[in-house]
Length: 387
Image (tube, rainbow, N blue to C red; front, side, top):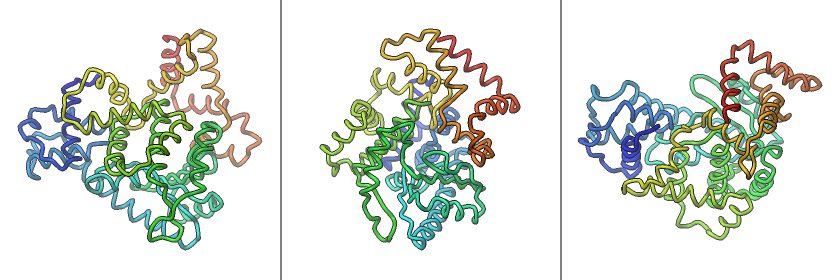
């Protein structure tokens, strides 16, 4: 559990970095800097927090007081941002030459609203594109030495190449099977995209639709395995940069259709409170932040199990033995789309011979045993039966 003082210190560093303010060097030296580094790494905010520390000492922080790797994490984030920008430019040129419309998403856009290049860390680049050219885009990536990590098995295809390149090429923004209401809403949005200035085939959303997509994607992670401080910071950064010009009535209608009105209000208020104010956190702020703090950037298995069980328990909150058995059955025999995505990563043979797909749950169990993942499985079983 994060100490309230540690949380205040981390938020102070992030506010200083985002506001371009010089942090108080005496306060910085009084912090548990090892803990600040670990917390910020856990939330993919190490580059941003280090910038505040560096600025506090006019670019010459006492290296003997800083944890190993903090400066390197910031330098790596800047280097990766430059490498990704060059690779995105090559992809954009290919799409322009091939007549393929494309729409940059998430971090690719959000990084522009951060103070400097590289301060919004990204593990991958997300781009929506014309699904009619899915095979041609795959061929472009493979010709450049990318490994196909997933293809044709969900809402996006994944391509990886050392040293840092990860691209998620979306054919749709949300799965129609997993999130039918969201998929239907954003399919309507993508039919009315705006032109991207300076391109023939580049596309962009309106600022209102960008915010709606940001909130929906955030909630998808929030109710799955959780999401961390960076999601709240992204929300704050976007609203600070674009909020005054947004159409409130349009946003209200969209949030109602997406079923996210309460989540959006609570998240925006929390983001503004912790990043837009230097006042001490209120008890209710600290309680609300606990879930984000323990989730990290990409969520945790513990949160994922808890959230699945809560959803299965229903409105009365009663988790009967029968409901636990239903949970375990669904974990052993997931839906077809989940298994297709799993096969794309672990067993592409089944996607080439789809008539064998009914056998994949059994193969998945054997795969787990062969990879010695029984400890992970037993921990999940214990967690379920303790509820």
